[in-house]
Length: 289
Image 1: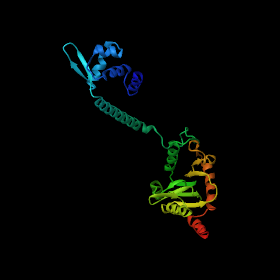
Image 2: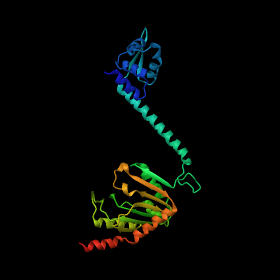
Image 3: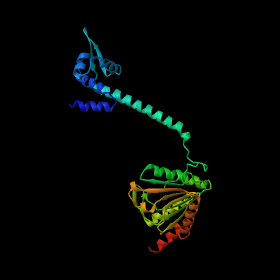
Image 4: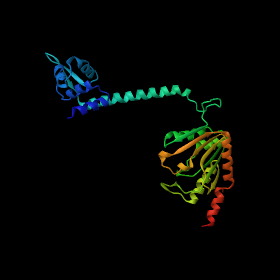
């Protein structure tokens, strides 16, 4: 047995080094006196009394009284594991409770929507790398929308018929969502229990589903930027050069500038006027079948 390695493992789970040495000696399973334990563990006798007392209080070992001295004998190791597991679980639960309470109290300091007078607000924010912050920032901007969301992108991944509660609520409150999609089959759809590659008919069906939920949708063959324009004030832009980059090299720009947002809105409208509705696209593909 490599005692040094065992001691390091004990230390990694919260034991002090001298406690680990005492524990290893007790693992012989026979009743041992303090002098015998100290000698075997190579520790001073006076230094282990408190440790043995603590072990006894925690139920790790029994104290056996003899005519001449007290002896200590470890209990079944499986029982000790159960006790330690219970203690660690309770400790973790308490720490998580404190963590949640602490951040709950700090939540009032966090500003979801900085005011215009907040001079610390950045006009441009660069977000790099594949991380949750990119997704959270995107959702934060979308949820901050009050009147209008203009979106240009390409359908990717798996597209389902799940209803987007935010979109439904936003449109119900009088908001407008216009989505311009690049004609592409780089996505998959669920049919029954299977997920299959999309067809042109599936692209039309997905767009019709969006329209049914209240969105205005058009399709284009133009290489449009991956961009969202919110309330003519904010822009979330996935840089074109990074679109085909690996996930850990993704780059986004968040721009808070009303003039630039208006310029991009004009660009969006230009693309929109030159694009086809789902029905027009559907009629076109029917001509070639």
